[in-house]
Image 1 (cartoon, helix red, strand yellow):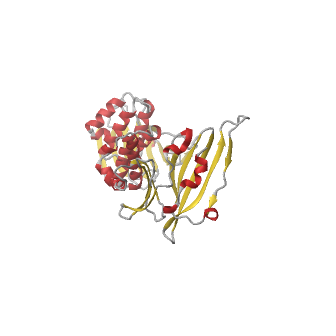
Image 2 (cartoon, rainbow, N blue to C red):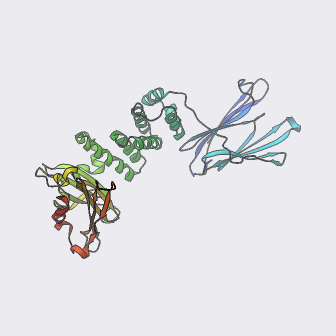
Image 3 (cartoon, rainbow, N blue to C red):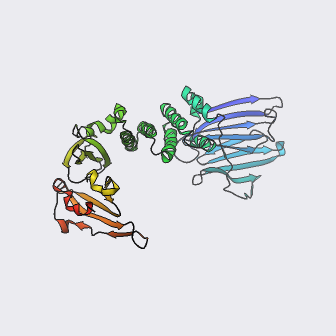
Length: 423
């Protein structure tokens, strides 16, 4: 679709503004290209007559100007804009300029200039000639416009628009709420790509900000990127649990992540400790490892296998894998974390006092037997106050099936490592 507005002024110079929808940067998506010829009679503040280009892509907005005496002929192809004009009347010089988009450097540059068939030398053929769009609002005013749902303002928002604000008003404790709210309003207005761009900036600096992960999950979900959405939602739930606020987690998130179903496997008196997701049985579907704590101090570990419908079913439970809180010695609770990777999952512990120890217990899925078995045990010891001032770390022998035999997940008992936990 092409829209052209023509304006005839006193000296018969023809002005025009044109808008086209074309793929100009070669990414396969249509961009909005607007160009306008500006004469000195209409724009007396200009030093010289120009033609101005504004290019809005899916991710960014670019602008550049070039000297132009009379209204030119403009040709737009993929990755290139060609301007042809005649300077000096009927016997004037025919000028042709080609501007190209550098996808690697993400900018426009003058690639070629031809005068009456002779090519002029371009001193720096890759030098950037476009400039970024600079919004007219302060951060506070921009937030107010977003809150009002000002469609004209929000339609203009691209990643470079966001970058401008982040540079003018750096992301900090005093501005993070404003940026989070802007991202929320962008997402509600359907600007999900821009919302994701801003929210990723927020969580990279404020990784503990739960509501940002909530909004990020919504934006990814709206874009159809459900795997990324679920990761954001689950991290949000984890942060809310740490803050003791899991009761106010929205029901839509519990439904989308099946967190409510997972929580139903816990005993009524059990306290949530940790939940990690990953493909345990290598079927391409996320499974989960859940660790809770009973009143008696025992810590059940639940293996939950994901289904194609997105639900979970319990594979098994073992209360003798994760160490109790008092087993860490002077260093406190020894339960360090859960790692899931390529059909393996590991339970990590560390504890001790002056003599620090670590224990990592790894289980593996046997696809033939469709069961989980103990794969290996390893760890280290370290004297943190040695006589020479250096910390000496001694890696213990990694024990495998050759050492302990075949041990199913349900039969494993961590008492075999008690010698380390009493140091």
